[in-house]
Image (cartoon, rainbow, N blue to C red; front, side):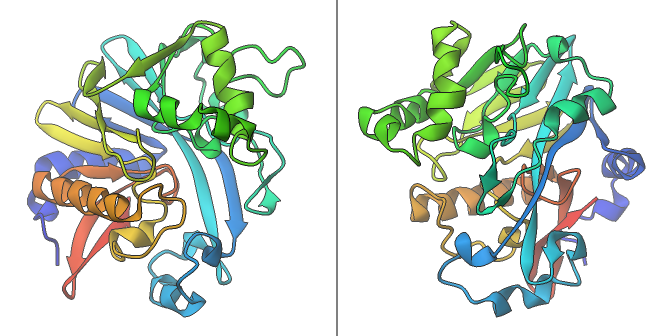
Length: 303
């Protein structure tokens, strides 16, 4: 049973038809392409240390693409939003930086740009939802010895609260926590291509960034609103599709656990109330779906 009567919505029907064909989605005048840096498999107890593996068993049939045995098979998604002659890339993946959570990271994003016929130079804005390493890894061309900017014509944009948090002396000097920032973020400032945001900011017609702190101090999401159609890019508010249902679980990557849970519930409520498609970096490829209600619980349903 749907909570938003999506089966009777001609707008959502059009979006579903577009999404079902390939890794593209149309929201009003905004065209969205789902890209991927590949996927990594890992023990879910790394991210949910307080939970046993059994808690995920009810989701095996609902999300078969998300499980490799009892392990998560986690997508490393990025998204290109085209609107009004502008192209915005949301997040740049993990990059070819060895292991992620103890498993090899494929680093496929640049190749996926090529597969989709999107030129790196066509990107006007690289919007970083936050500064964790799996969202900034291809800011530079790590596959080239000179390491030039991956998106040479783009401004790179992030919330100033994340910049302040991740660039303290303590964070930068930490071998683990500072690695990605030193490698993939600090060069942006040095090259003069980094812009800081402090609140709601329009990045392209119909594409607006807004603060959703909790996962990190400056985590941001995107509202895509055009011609009475809506979608929400939630970044890492949802680190897996199961969190749309199990919203209260302690998620170890969250900077502030209670704030992260509040942000999760708020944005899911917003999406449900406005009939918005929910897009997430670590949701099942290509990364978007609808919210439904089943037997008193809310679920994210892949398109």
